[in-house]
Length: 134
Length: 119
Ligand SMILES: Nc1ncnc2c1ncn2[C@@H]1O[C@H](COP(=O)(O)OP(=O)(O)O)[C@@H](O)[C@H]1O
Ligand SMILES: [Mg+2]
Image (cartoon, rainbow over all chains, first blue to last red; front, side, top):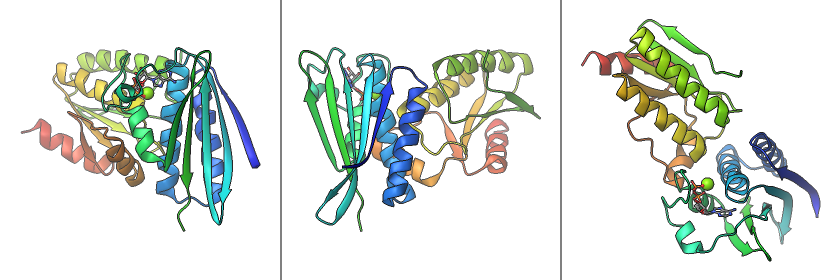
């Protein structure tokens, strides 16, 4: 694996690093401005969830290659309360706090692959992948 | 304390949102804007987001809150400078900015605001 990045997410300022990191990777892979905007937005939504709902965690970002396709994989992990009802959490407009409830479902729509994995004993891991279309 | 400047232009207030928006800044902005609106009796608020390469649901909610606050104080809000990829991404996420009109740039935003206000 090349160009792996690790970004701790402990405070709001860290979300600026998340976005910067994703921008750099996306541009090095050759993403156009629209796909870069979509991936950065998804990353910031997931990063904010890691911070707010997951009580902090980190993101790992890496360039992935499959056959001839290139993409970016973002891997968010926290040790928060976890997501007890994933369908509910993915419902447009559902929020357990005072958000818009469009971060998780929105991020899922903005990437090509989206996987939510419960972490034991507690927490969430979310893997989002976007492929560069050529 | 960190604050976002609010410019008074004619009968309007102009707010420029920068990339490093965070909770404390947003709260201060709400307070300052409420204060300035009642102080100046401005009838319109222009929010310039041309510096933002992305707008997430957090920023969208702040913009929505500003628009609501303005309405209570008898002013209208127009959002200017949204980049096309940002607009497309918001649509895809399902984020709608209720109560917020949009214009391409500050000049067009001023025209639109004056039209809304003088109606
Ligand atoms: N990392 C996480 N840990 C725990 N719960 C989460 C996490 N991410 C999302 N959720 C849950 O999913 C809900 C929906 O998330 P989201 O669509 O981003 O909306 P919002 O963040 O505006 O509440 C959240 O309100 C929260 O209950
Ligand atoms: Mg969220």
